[in-house]
Length: 311
Image (tube, rainbow, N blue to C red):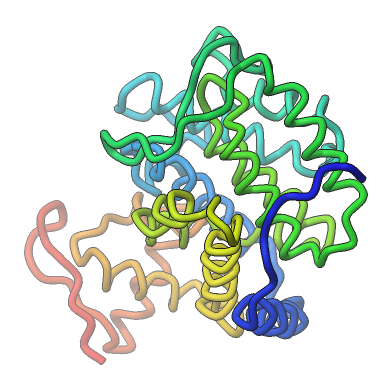
């Protein structure tokens, strides 16, 4: 193995790897299809929102269900593409460049002419209007990507660390004309899912979006004498938070409904149905039971009223 990305293993990294490994061990009991679906929606919303996509989780849900959404056409296309790209996870080999190009082709279909192809011109990582990193020349991209994939295939580093290193190095190379952030985050998920399958349905991207400024800062400050160590520490912290903020046990439908009412007291049955993944009639049934139990009550008109949680 000729290429070795620069980084150092700090006590913080070691502790986070131990913390995440322990949390992952206790996570299997939570797995269920409803949670997977909700987390996939969070993942897609988060990874696109980082790049400026304005669709809400409700709109992402609607696109996932094939329903019409009133939003910019390109943003709806980004959601459709991300759904397809994440559906490819089971079929992709994290150590094959050809599969990376296949994933990028899915992520950028109909958005750019060079979908599934390395860029031909200059590029950089942009945070807002500020360029925080100028990428290597386009002619170097195939060689740099091949070196990175050879390293990933041969490294004996823990997958948690290796996936972070890959993520940073990928963003540093910035191999595509567009979609580098989305594809890089997808690839880290792919690497981690080969270590522990639960990462396929863990919404890490949603927490990255929460700390979007810190994400770009971690990219910007990496690359010095300590290599990508700051980025590794940041992403591992995100993964640890993602695991610790997941519920210890799957919530009941009524608990999920109450969660959504707390966020939006004016939420409708149709909106609740889309978020939770049941029919509007099913939502009506649970709302009636919650009302009869005195847990919630509705004030105002059917269209413009709101829900109040009584206890």
